[in-house]
Length: 314
Image 1 (tube, helix red, strand yellow):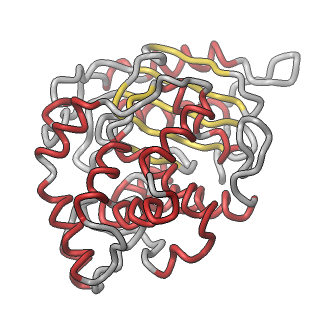
Image 2 (cartoon, one colour):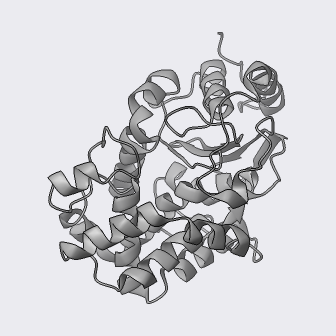
């Protein structure tokens, strides 16, 4: 597939690229399955699709249902990780690893084998540790994430969907087991119930592709927020992008890197946030998932986008 030619102004012609991406994914829309472990999002239409791109300058372009809000789920883990590193630096890595897991995102097996140290911050056990640390550092882990997202999108109404949060909490037995297991090794600083509450609420935040693309822009800008202030050092932003590349799409990260070639974090509601450092951040949403828990149409869309533009980290 040939790379898209730049416009006369020197920038990418986004509209024809986005239209080509939308055409390319039509045949896979409706494929896969909508997960049922969170009943409140189990009735999502697997043919729904949206894609937004936010440039490092803050311009936003989209196609499909790119302004429709959905549950961000595990994409929220990118923001909890960034906020902990901003406040606590390298200290987090004594409690959680940085390696791909090779097991399902909610697996207990590896956690027991490795004495309660999660493989990375994006599997559920690792994200619980990160949420716990953010709760210690701020007193309000969910509130810290909500405030950050509202500021980056200039959208004061962004919040957790209480119906989704209640549904997730009521059926989150595996996450509760993970949290108690972590606590049994002394790896949680706060009561299990509080950690689970903040974790569920930040996963249940509802955002659109446009809003998530804007919120992820600090990683495309090497750690600089939308208002020009620095959240992370350039080195720390690079490291988060690296963990997204190697661990952000569960145990399909190798295949995703092969097909798409950019850092990304997926969520079980069908969203994927992708970062192209120095250029843009993208968010795609389509609820039909493959057997690894990643959006089928979302991966196809990002594959097409990077093929058309020639933009990747490789």
